[in-house]
Structure formats: C-alpha cells, structure tokens
View 1 (cartoon, one colour):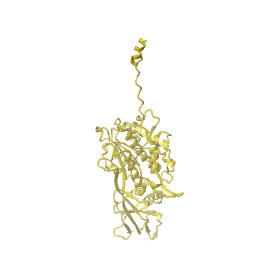
View 2 (tube, rainbow, N blue to C red):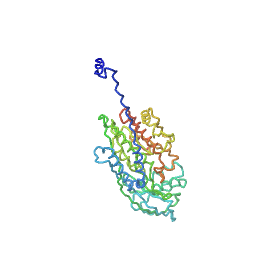
View 3 (cartoon, rainbow, N blue to C red):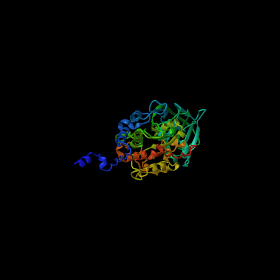
View 4 (cartoon, rainbow, N blue to C red):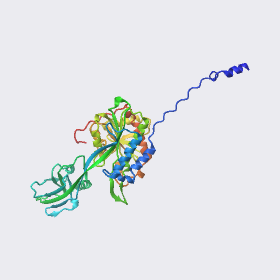
Length: 445
C-alpha cells in the first residue's frame, strides 16, 4: 500500500513520456469574398445605375458607391488628397446635323457630317477665306487619313470616295454621338461629304456646335506599403467603372448595363482591395483605382497616369471583362502584351501548384494591349497589362443592352479574381519585379 501511495503521488510526467505539443493548424489561404463579388457587380450593373454613362447621373452614382466601398474596406486617400475622388474635366462637343448644298444640289443628311469647335459654322465658296478642300480616295490606305481629319487643325472640306462608304458611316456614327477631349476644341472644323469632288465646286454649308465642360471622377485609394525601402514601388490594380449609358431601345430595354464591361473588372478591384487589406502584409504600396471615361477615349486613366512618376510604378494589373469563361476553358484568363515583359511569366510562377493558368492574348489582331486603361502607363515603360477572359470575336453582348449580370458566370469570375490575388503575391511582396516595357516615343503601336 505504501508503494502504491508513493507511485500515486508522483507527477504524471514521471509515469509516461511527455506528450508532444499539438501541431499548429495550417494557416488558411486568404480567399476573395464571393459575397463581395456578387454584391458589387450586381450593384454596378443594376438598372438604377443607368448604364454608368460618362457625365451622367448614373456614372456619378457609381462613383459614390465605389468611394463608399473604399472607405468601408479601410483604404487611404493618395498622399495630399482628402478623399478618394480624383477630379478631372473633359470637354464634350456635339455638332448638329449639317445643311449643305453642293453645286446647287441639297445633300442628304446621311451624306454629310461635321466635327467643329466653332459655335456657328457658315461656309460659302464665295468667302474670302474659304476652307481647304481635300479628297479621300478609294485606296484602303486612305482610311487612316479620313480619321485623321476628325481632329481638325484647320478648316477643311473633305470629299470621301464612295468606296470608303463603310468607314464614312463609322465616322458619322462616332461624330453623331459627340466627341470628348481633355482640352477645349480648337476653333476649326472639318466637313465630310460622301461623294466625288466636282470639277467645278460651289457650296453653302452651315451647322452649329455646343461645347460643354464635364467634371469626371476617378476613384482612387491605397494601402501603404509595409517596407519603407519600397515606398516608391507602387503596384496598381485598376478597372473602369464607366459604360455607355443609354442605347437605342431593344425590346423595351435601353440601358446598357455593362455587367461584363467593365463592372466585372471594377468588382475585381474592390474585391482585391478587400483581400489585400485583410492580409495586411504588402511590402509595396498598393493603389486601387476605378477609372472614368474609358469608353470615350481613356481620359480617366490618362489623367491618373499624369499624377504619378512612371518610374515609381512597379506594375499595373488592369482588369477588363472577366465575367465569362475564356476560350481556353475554366480556370484560365489571358494577358494582353504577354510578350512585352515577363509580367505574365511571374504571375504564373506565383500560381505554382494551382490549376489556374494565364495565357497570352489569343486575339492579337484586336490590338487589345493599347485599347484599355493600361495603355498610357505601358507607353511610359511601366509593365502595365490587362487581364481578361472575354471571347471578343464571338461576344454578341459586348456594348449592347443585353450585357446583364444574369449573363455572367460569377463562380468563374470569383476564381479569376482569386487567381489574380494569388498570382500578384510575388510582386506585392517585392520578391518579384517585372521587366520594364520599352517606352513609346511616337504614336506607333
């Protein structure tokens, strides 16, 4: 009994081997919130956003919503700014239908179009200072010259060969919706007439133009970097929140909701901001921006790019139309300008062990690298690329009233955003730095 009492009194550790401490549970990989993705894209593409047209109430409503999201997440304004709105002014110019008589014959409205910076245009062949007269010939190479006259630097009357009718109609459609520029238009005009130039020419031409300044807003926020040595190595995540507003009614619907273009990409920006804020481990500063005015010339991204030193931007992730499955199948997306830097290769390296893969742009004939908001920074040498999944050649919903949330694959879209988040970790942490793109010094593309 005494021995039993002694043994009972000994510490338990003396009776058996010390137990090993339980292993710590594996850290969970941060996940993009599918709930955020669904809520944000549904909000941006809702009918009450009125298609988020540039300078329209729906566009302002979308900007306010996005600024609220950045505040909710806990982003900070850019240094020197008091809020998330980055304001810019553009000038919208609309020229009325042209009244034209050529050699005594009244021209049909569909045969004449003008672009003008003059409030009132009244030309006559009897004027002392008559406009120059130019001809666009039938050769396909003349098409570039045709569109060059759409930015007048002198008063010019242009006769367009009927072999260029398709291009003329495209130009007329573009000018008929009005033009937008970052500066007030110059006091010159071009009048285009579809038809051959008469050997003997007399004319009377009149039209009027309204120029209106419009204030636009990029929505910009940041997560400061945690490594002071990398304070000048910004990483930008971007998408454009504007769309077309109202279009010609189809089956009673005139709202171009722009669910894929580009509510999907803007949603990705919000979801990624939320993701990286929760991680709270970014060595480099992260800038999140929703651009205005991509659809009318990229003026939002152009203005944004002028506020940064391009040498202080390590990379740009521009996200455009990711709401549907790519031509390569599920768990894929493509990167524009894949061959212009090693950006895509670095992203893929960070996806090691994942079934997701990034592919080069399968539509090089579309020149997509220079058609989205990455273009301005890319021209300045920044490895700025667009990530997309849209099957552009066969996308029948692009720029139509049928680009609705119901047409999107939200599960695939969330998987794409998750892949972007994971693939960006090397760049965000400062462990990867993409090669710079050779800057463009002229307008060649």
